[in-house]
Length: 307
Image (tube, rainbow, N blue to C red; front, side, top):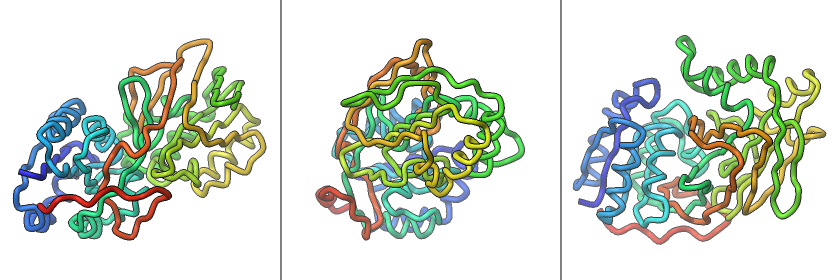
């Protein structure tokens, strides 16, 4: 059996299975030796993926968004088992980073071509992330998102949660070092990114590339409220990177320190991680099925074996 399909029933506001159902015939036709699994928890996603890698399966398909992909990638990074993302979640920035469309049918049509690329991941302690590591107001914003009952998770909800957080957040002291001092002072938000976008398409680091062997930093300091509103409004098109005071750098290793431990998010998920910590890039650690037209800055992964 060469292919495992993992369905996260809670992805996309519990709509993942319904959105996937119409495409199961296409998936079965392309990969007839298909094993379908439904995850019971975030930890189970990682376990199912790690088991597939240990067995040497050619590919793991996952139906979900960035949070789902985060936990699956933690079971596959460093292995030869490729990950195929069927983007049925509310945020699909990792899929977007390799040219996969948000439309499920179009994405499946690309995935069945088995075009694999080797992408980088970020590594912090014993965890990896594909999209973004966040420190600062990201944590209370995500807590508001998770508590929301009216809006669905996506750019609109993230913008609303960010605005509410922005008005009350007291920025903590944060130091970020690479090969030199990059940032030292009160920080509203700091993101160490692998992808150019997060939270459903917000361009936090527009020049980031998942195959360049590096991570990208964006740190937004404490600013007058009018400038903060403009900065966070500009995140949708990347215009914030040109604003005075906003720090953007590329690095292979970053150290984040603070006088008091600060919570850390990974790929939009709350974690138990706290500063101080070291973040490094793991080049080419994850094989990802991509749009056949996607060309990163580094060589592509070897072709997969036949199904």
